[in-house]
Image 1: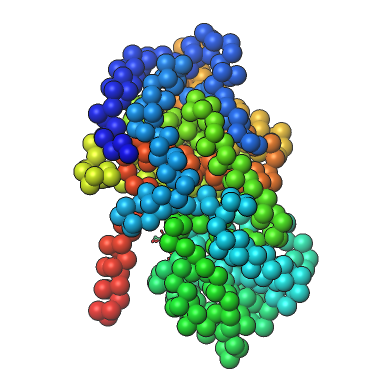
Image 2 (image 1 turned 90 degrees about the horizontal axis):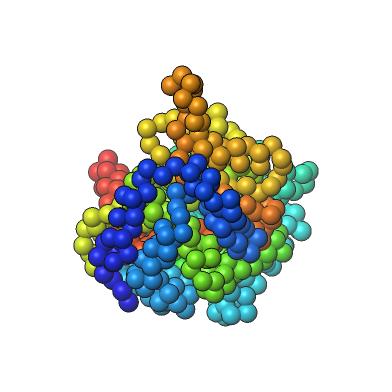
Length: 477
Ligand code: F6P
């Protein structure tokens, strides 16, 4: 497969020249010269429309970006991802998260695990012997199920199962997750692929102490690839993970059990189907209309050719407020890399810093910088058409960033330069299926960017040194 540096691709040099030539072109001009711009620069995936008309691109930019993807061998890499090839060489593993939501085409072990998950979740939800479920995990063993439960679980109606999450080694986090809970009616789900993560193990031990003399096996379920250790911990049920699923891509596996407990097995199945829809779209749709490919290439254009160092994600939906923190791990742990697949230091930018907050709350916090700061920050607005206020505000912010003001009579502090790029992702509604679609879009975006940047998106060696140092400091005490 193609492992030459992207900067040695013909399209890279052409994009650099092209970026230079369109430097002075304002989004106001692009819209004035093309009445069909908002139709032309949009693409549809199942349940989601990407409007990227406010990105600083023209037809030529897109042609060159698609050429870059082709030169980097995207089609071949995509086949390797989707067929479960070992594309993570530093850990000698596949990155086969798509097999977790492939329906009938999933491996038998995935089916069997889903059957166990459905039966456990349904029992927990219907028997009502547990009133509180606490997920103990961190990173990929926390952020995914936490997002799904927060976005989709009902508004805490009387008698509903209360599903909480504790991720921090700070005991305050677990204490908060246990506020008002009774040991007799509390179930812990310990989620750790390795079953060695310091924070999770500390919280699991603290949970055992909190249960007092109660039988561990009655109050713990474990989810891990290290099943032997998870069993000796004393969990009553141990559900598997597999080395071919990375933590930050694992919400579709038994890692999602707490989310399934919160939303029900049927809704979780819908969530999986949504991701499957996007896998099909990613596999089949030509590059220029392929939504995750477009999201990735627009990110490359902004980071590598327009010099954007950060990227903001603003869901205009309270239910989706955890999307930015979920995406922080997905994008930055995957593509925050400084060496390429050959071990050479790269001389181009890789993942920008991703940040964000739910809109409209964000407007009263940091939008000043977005509109008038010295940096241009590309934005993804996520609009779930939940109500007219949210949609109007998301659209207004995108327009204000793009067009700014062009009245020279305004005093300097009232001028908005505009020409600040953004995309809008429209979801028809917030449903389990559409949430699955949204997350899968970003997963494939991350993969495509890794291909373009010639980096391995599926390892995370950068987190090891600090863990090791903390361990040493603790043992020295
Ligand atoms: O420290 C980073 C990390 O390894 C993530 O990649 C992972 O999602 C998280 O820690 C949790 O790991 P585990 O599931 O093994 O506890």
